[in-house]
Image 1 (cartoon, helix red, strand yellow):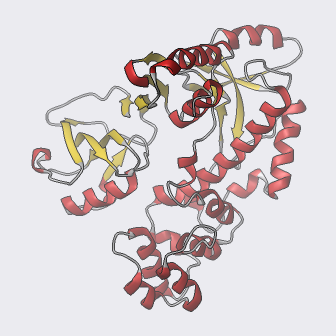
Image 2 (cartoon, one colour):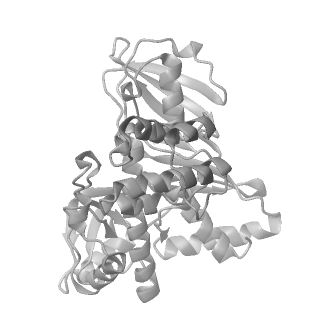
Image 3 (spheres, one colour):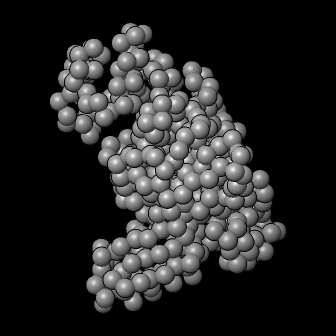
Length: 383
């Protein structure tokens, strides 16, 4: 996977150093912390465009507010491909999308079926824009559960769940901590590689509780928990919509549609409300890939849709016992989220099916390749 960044102006005397790094089995947050320690600077002086998990090989851009020599960086499984200076800082979301190369490891006889499946997906308007499983944790898929506790104001329970989750954890050091609840002992047992867990334990040792312990974590990591819960709600609503209507390309009165670019990135400031008078015109624009139906990523400024779509959203919120205003997080105002909207379907761009099942394609920012692959394997019946 390789990031497609927004245009970044180059200036040989610029304030920031931009590095393009190929990472193998590094997730973004852990690499950022390691790079900050390596350069002996605050992690706050390093920014990035998008977060990636540690599976596979990724190519990412990082922006460093410090003077150093990129060619001298020697970090295992991290190769500096390019570096340049710029006066513009990179921030989360400064991406057009990502290019993917995926090895399906299928035999030659299955390849025509894969191409047929992709063609059928495109004719239906693309694949459902679910958040992939890695959004909820690469090993312990519980980030959304931690996020729900944060949104509910149960901060100490949220921190404890990050340290020990009986649903996933079998390591003795986690189980021991759940039994004795002593951070001093836990710090001796938790491996050094678990930087974030050790930060929470260090906070608990100093303050005697975990109530405000998320202050010890990078803001980007703490926000990830809240975002994961928003993503979980989105996936549930999208699943209900697919079950009820099947077709994700045909809008209904009460929907909100968004304009999209060639990579299906949405112009979120240009919302169009669907009603009985414009539904046919909007349906045609959805089929022409200039508009897409959207669903809320709920936050404190979000409004529930009208009509039947609103009924689906209300059902999920009531099942979860959560309201949009709860995303204005009283104990951690910096983790509050005003919410936004996300399109329900998109298409792979520049799709190529090569020899031995090698797929190459591009997706807009925030779109998960795993969601596309799941649909291909499911519909092609080759999993």
